[in-house]
Amino acid sequence: MKTQRVLITGGAGFIGCNFVRSCCQDAGATIVLDALTYAGNRATLADLEGPENFAFVEGDICDSVLVSKLLTQYAIDTVIHFAAESHVDRSISSPAVFVHTNVVGTFTLLEAFRHHWEDEGKPEGFRFLHVSTDEVFGSLNFDDPPFSETAPYAPNSPYAASKAGSDHLVRAYFHTYGLPTLITNCSNNYGPYQFPEKLIPLMCLNILLGKPLPVYGDGQNIRDWLHVEDHCSAIATVLQKAAPGATYNIGGNNQVKNIDIVEQLCALMDELGGDLPTSPSRELITFVPDRPGHDRRYAMDIAKIQRELGWSPSYDFATGLRHTVQWYLSHRDWWQPLLSDQYQTYYADLYGDRAAL
Ligand code: NAD
Ligand code: TYD
Image 1 (cartoon, protein in one colour):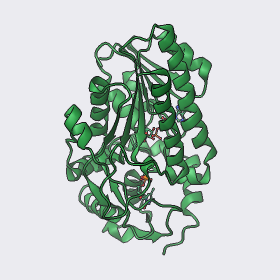
Image 2 (image 1 turned 90 degrees about the vertical axis):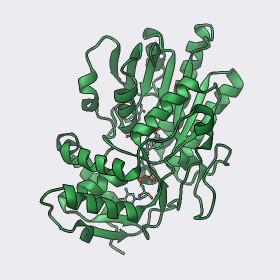
Image 3 (image 1 turned 180 degrees about the vertical axis):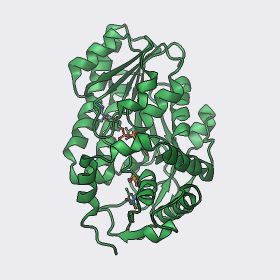
Image 4 (image 1 turned 90 degrees about the horizontal axis):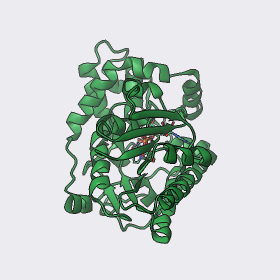
């Protein structure tokens, strides 16, 4: 990242802020563009603000005038596009904003970056890296091989469909205009700064608060979990080494059933969480009606990025999960304000009617 002048969209969210913190220290310029939706938190980046080569801009990726202005004003050569609506459950209850941000927003960025790149004489070093998900490939059966980069797109949720749409636009901009794009499709991330609505932080905080631990369906769904720092190092590697137009799958070689994660979190919290309202905390586990259309299994084949770019995950899951639990225990000041009235309403709407199975 040494000389690059980077526009990071969604840099106040979970993965974006980890990327800014771990990979942008030596960039020529780091400009964060974030709309600060419920999932964005400027305070997470507060200690980085100040130096001349860092700027935080509150704004929407769908605002083409603003995006074009930033690209020119800061002489941006690299866009790393994290901004999205990212939670499957919210995409089921409110799909419109997913189509707007994830599809129209990505289109707006691509158009602005294409004009900027053309105006600058199509420099070879420009890059547009689009951060996407394994969910675009749909659901695997238990004995299917993991998804490779050539797996057919088969998105099942409005979230996955909107990310698939954005991936297709990025691909089309490479093929039609020669825009130097890259796409990464990653599996489920965990680690510091993840918003409390997602599985791992939700279970940790509910244990601390003595609330039920809502496991959807039979708890046998499988995700391929990757520590967020490993995801960030993979993105930095793809940016440095990959040829324009390439796509890479990223994952942890780490398939775990939901119920096993919840059990592990209960054990860690019992060990590390001090005086808990309910002990042992596994007594809080509650099976609730399933998420509509819930994908059974995701798993990524990461042979291509390992072979071509020399990247592999570094965390083992037991260590990464322990660090994550310790982080939430020692960062109450970060997550407590996020449990706002707005969040309580969201929580009651999603979980309130879900009687235990
Ligand atoms: P997040 O929900 O934590 O953060 C999203 C960020 O985007 C927030 O800061 C939000 O304010 C910002 N944002 C939303 N709409 C915006 C808009 N219109 N304009 C500008 N900013 C906007 O998401 P995350 O978990 O950090 O995910 C980041 C990216 O990685 C997403 O594109 C997601 O699809 C992808 N991804 C996530 C995971 C995962 O496990 N979390 C896995 C694979 C891929
Ligand atoms: P999530 O963190 O929402 O990620 P994704 O749906 O993108 O994979 O959920 C991870 C898994 O955990 C998923 O299979 C749904 C399940 N889950 C629950 O069982 N209970 C919950 O309260 C949540 C939020 C998720």
